[in-house]
Length: 41
Length: 105
Image (tube, rainbow over all chains, first blue to last red; front, side):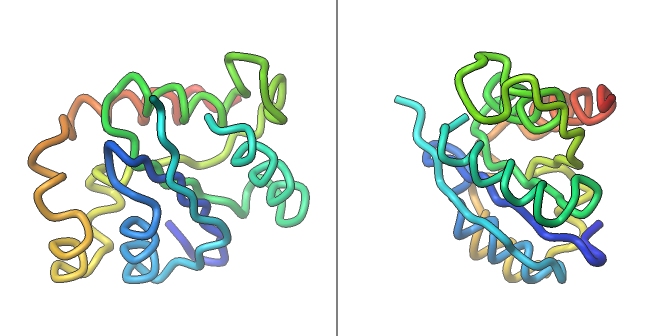
């Protein structure tokens, strides 16, 4: 899934936050290019 | 989707190419996951951001989709996602994002 790819992480405050997803991406061997945690209120 | 995120995604697509990007979502429900996926595949449906009319066709997955989850170390998964995986409607969310992924132009 991540071979030679840049990963964009779009987390959400009410779901899974960006840094938590980014840690999973790194664990899966991906390179994180951008991380954010959005909030829809 | 946040307007700043749309600008960043557009810039990264210009820099690296659409085929070299993967988007991972953490949306809490199927509706918001589908809108976020639509934005990076077919363009911003609200026409408010930088991705309006930008059919990037990016590869997009939700963090709870098995295709992604299976790649993550179990301890990391438990620490970072843990109970949220049980609280959120993973099947419904996964189906929504998969459907949008398959709508790639």
